[in-house]
Image (cartoon, rainbow, N blue to C red; front, side, top):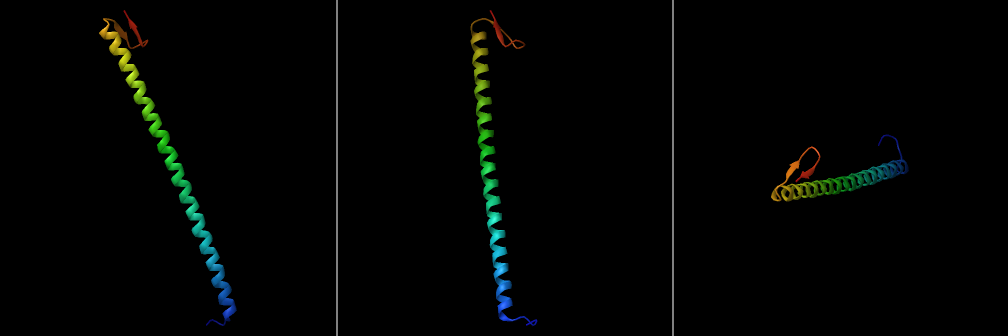
Length: 82
């Protein structure tokens, strides 16, 4: 077999096994990092969406109170002119 003894083939096999294990562990760590980053990004995005929804609801409530009270809502200043 290509002139190599059994000891040489065992060393080559051991080196390949170590390299394969390192490649697998680094790939797993990379994937775990990506998953964690995606989860953090989605949490931030959901929080921003929730904050935007609350802000829109607050604006709508101020607008309705103004109009229901007989006022004129100024979109330019965001105030109610009675």
